[in-house]
Image (tube, rainbow over all chains, first blue to last red; front, side, top):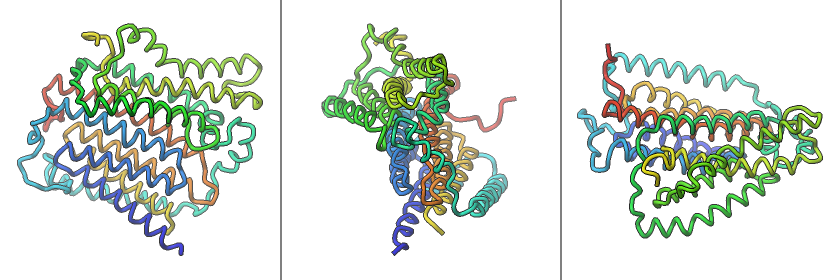
Length: 325
Length: 100
């Protein structure tokens, strides 16, 4: 009765580890990245098994989708197609075996390394196994205060109310990453490939659908799995699809309007936090009566910013800076 | 042995595999992949430990969602750095022997 779920989880866990082993040991980078996308999808399944549907949504959109697209685009620039053998080491086939793929370091060094990692894994495993088997953590504190948070989905309550600082700083991290990418990205924007018929059609069909689902996730996030991050990553995915299909932001929008969209999430978050403070409360401590509306407002702006930032991160170079598409 | 505990151990396995791959692979794109696998291992450990008792703790869930978004921005930055290295040196690998 209770054994079947455990077996299922065992198979899932084993497959995940096997995929990780394969992708880290694969000789061809392309294969490694495709395996990484499969790895992300499997992770999403495991999140569902662990009762974390919010995380599953984020993982499916970001971990499997956007990261895979980002890495594949990077691979195309690092090793142009047709250069597939360049990363094959002369040693041998050795597919799936991490040890044989590597070069340098010498065998004794690698043996030491494997031994050290086994010790590390055993130590961490021992630490996990010696933890108390039941620990409610902060779930009671969250449940007791959920009524005051303005939303009924506990994860959204934690993200946007109880620990809003984390989310605020995270928006800052996203912007900082984009700034760094724009400053370092000397590589000119890869010439937009002529979008094939299928890709162009797909982009046209999927973009409105992605926008619709993003809006739905944003709206429903207050009481069911969903929220700003999931909706934002879907917007980002729509942006990536449009970029892949050869679409670029018009020159008129690539300067100020784009920048305003990028920072509106962080700016509105700060503004709400500060105005709550001016009204007599503490920074980001919303009054319970208006918390629901404020959270939705912040989430809407954050969704827009996260989506634009993710799409801009994928594009890499500053839009309109070089050859102004 | 329960399912959360099992996934916590799988998370440790992923972390260790990723750490090993980060150290031994000279190719930068492989290092980026390996760091992502390490991160997934940490996320899995956090969420698995949140499910030990019947009431699921939502705080680690929120932390992991934040972590996933930070991970992709870090990955994008790492990719940009890698492309820059490729521009400067002509290859996206670390040298065999460190420069004098």
